[in-house]
Image 1: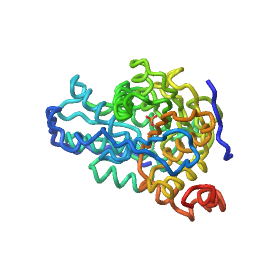
Image 2 (image 1 turned 90 degrees about the vertical axis):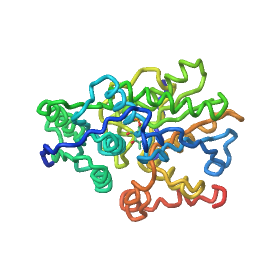
Image 3 (image 1 turned 180 degrees about the vertical axis):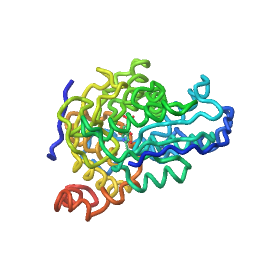
Image 4 (image 1 turned 90 degrees about the horizontal axis):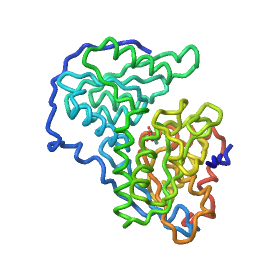
Length: 354
Ligand SMILES: Cc1ncc(COP(=O)(O)O)c(C=O)c1O
């Protein structure tokens, strides 16, 4: 498989609060019934010289604000259907972002107590969102001694809470097959709307739930769609050296158990600056305010656009929305502090309507 590297260069506390549990039949799902069937829109401005059709799956229009609503609902539903989650079960997961918020939404709906283990890199906005849904936020203040990674420390913290909490359940998004399974439907929705013509799909990767679910659907339906994984420079999912990254969402410091050799035909690695450029171009050209990994997938398409044949249908999946990045990607001050004067990247005269 080809790996393409893009150009640019706590607090320990467990609450014992009780909850009322409203485990409901799956036919009566209120806001959760608004998860999935997200819009697929054609992008005509952001890559004006493209000879192919480009469509974006707007996963940020899920009610919790990201694609993670799908696996959150699928994993909790499966747990309820099999009896692993029942009256009084405490859900415990490590997440600094979208999965935590997706789970907080689903758990709030079912009246399940949810402890979300986060680290100091979690933004205050995400912590406030988690708390607004009623989740308990458990902050791991120091990284793992051996690896220096917060991820390892968060995983250890989840284990310790599970051990001392009776009737507890960990969704474990990095290994749970119901994460990937939820995304078979993501791909099915795309294929249905496009009448079966999907030549390329670009997915950002972290747990690999999205890409694996999409790839499994394509394989099961004998489709020849070429699958591109979009990973971060500094992430180790598809190999390479671990390095510091500023934009959260895609990428991982560990290869997740859901990773499967062959699920992607190619991997394109993008930098933090690529994400910013992609996001700013999307906002300026398409009026789409999306999160960092959406910018990443756009720039991955840009990277290989000359290899995509005329008339092909190409799909990008946009996982989350831009509001969660107002203090970083969409802050001129933050961008200048970290990358210098780079605004010419999205003000380029070569872009239409510039
Ligand atoms: C913003 C964003 N983009 C991409 C991904 C990667 O998706 P997956 O975990 O399904 O590989 C995530 C996962 O958390 C995410 O939050």
